[in-house]
Length: 337
Image 1 (cartoon, helix red, strand yellow):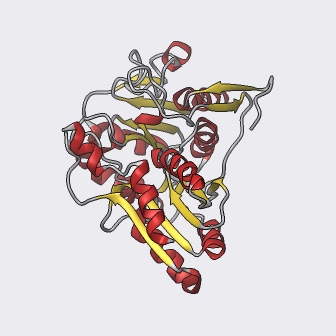
Image 2 (cartoon, helix red, strand yellow):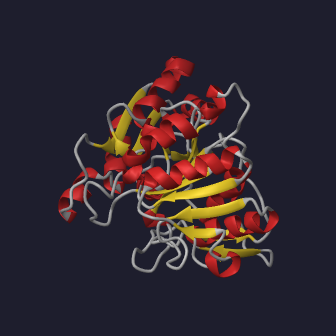
């Protein structure tokens, strides 16, 4: 998208905050709660500047008790407010699994539709910066697996803003997972790509609408989050070798845009799915199975690139080994040809 007077080039964190601030101005029932989100502005700049505009009543720091404040967010949503609650690291979800899995996701169903839970749960995900096994997971599949949650994963500033507007306005619970490496904070440089021109006006990106970030004819690469950018780098390398790769950014896992994926595979015949989550029982297997269900005859070759079933290591060389790299994606594509 070309930059104009009506757009600004933003980091992903600034784009998210822009959307949140707009929704807070428009609706007094929208508020943000989490650990270090007020004075500190979020350790990944997810709320930088919001407290100064909206005050402590609407941008509130909470005690280190995910069970308590996520439960409070569910309750607030059920009585008509629109809370945004942040998990500092998605890895911490375990202490509040009942609130997420059994309350947030299921209370609309359990009440026979008498209550809705219009809340957003934001969570920082991903590794690549040596924070070890309890602070570096993505866990997309863990949340996509449970009925009742919508799961969103932006990869660029443009997408981050549009998806956040849509998430806050949604009457169902949305899990909004942002990759730390893409946020554009000073101490963790982002790759080329996440910082994009962003319209200053509001706009929404509907869930279940994948984006073809690069068109191609020889192989379909399906991915999300950080690995959209690694896939695009891989596509550049492959182009030098005469291979044309189509890169699809899922943007949301639930709902999943099956049509865009299948249409691409029917064109290319080859599918490579790339994910920073664990390989077993996860996104890579689900995408491959979905394509096989919908259009098995078009599927000539398949490769899955994901984190092996091991904890994320603290050691930098070991972490680099387990998290899929651009080189890993290139190799996987080459095996399909």
